[in-house]
Image 1 (cartoon, rainbow, N blue to C red):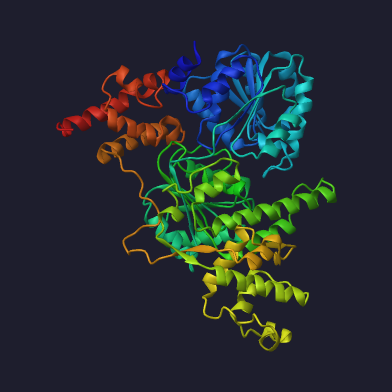
Image 2: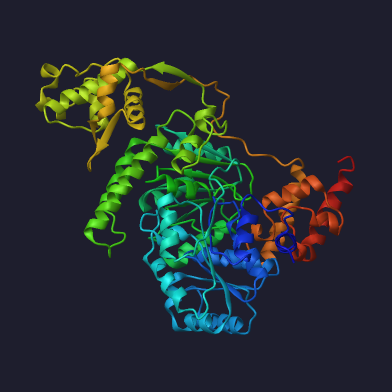
Length: 611
């Protein structure tokens, strides 16, 4: 069979997405491969298709226990023999899986990196023909990645123990050039084929809000997504508990997930979310890696994350099936300070030496700065994000809050000179302050903490921007930081001057800032979700799917995604060949589910003969 025939037969798609065919063909030719593809771009297809075509078994190394269960369920549903080995299995289930593997009844085996050192797993790898080893979430191998895992460093040793070196493929959603080079070097890849498909996901709307009342803003967003599945990320466990409790009190179907819960409660809450028994998951970043839930319609960050890599990965859990989805960040200056504290007091990577930890803290501080620039940006958010990942983009995407906001351009050249002059005057006194304190000084704050400096009597720039609102003054300072006219440094992120600061004063450079106009009352900050052409039929198909999922004890999206149901609504298939033309329907799913869903469509057409 050709790769395209395998894709159609087992996965129900007639065409490969961008980059998939190139990666698959390179693997089939015997080359190692590295794929950097955004969440939802179809990374798993890139190793699952060749795994089915190669002789022997493919081992997929993944840190994501929840992903293993999801992937294996989905593969089995498509008629593909797959299994996983991880700590969730009982001793009896573990032995049964090993027996299946040794009997040759498993084509794709998922394993956590910690399994690689066990005697039983090494026995499998050394006795059975291994055609390929795939490393998922490959950025975890690099200490410069956002989620470094020391266990990933043992993968190279495992590969050297194999009697015959298999081809190796590595995949991740987010990797800078530096991290990509680490993946190649640390996994020992041989002149790999490299493919970066691009980071843009056009179906996602990116928005940033700076509300006075975050919970009120959250409730507004949830009311715009009734009965839809979504994730709300919070920075701390305490905040997860608080937000979840308040949502439940306000009639929202919500549950929680963080590392402070028992394994049993985390598992139960995650299952309730995956099976659509609960609509909203409130969680720390401990939740979500590898959750292949296709119908997540929104991801809301109640707090700003500490870097764009994490934000992009977490926000990308929305709209995995290609349907429109909203990714909204609720920002406040307090989020910056909380992240600074978490960075300085992080206990991660405890086995690293102090010099390396200091390097990582410095890197994290710089990434936090870039995340702050994104959160306070007045021009296209998508352009900023893509530029950060090394991809050029147009200055207007039309699908982010900045591009959809009614801005007017304001000349802030004079204000910029005042801000730089104030920093200079303070530096003359060997004083340095952060953005909040500088705003107070520029606006002439009467707060007691400034009295000892006698600014009112001795500092010419004290109160020089008293006519500018606090919010606008802060926005101007953030704009100067983002455009590198001034700098931030040190643990407390104090403001300092740089070469551009002098040029700003000397050359009187013109600087402008986008300022929000009053929006019409009816204008919405989030995008309404696409509605099926046949909402009644769509609801009936979902009900059919829910019953089948309950009968088989799997999440509904494992049977068919919402995107597949929408395609059924458009194509209205009534016979087998027509049903096979629906995106996401393969031969196995046709045989197993074709009749129940076509019966629903037939019933709908009888009641609506004019459709």
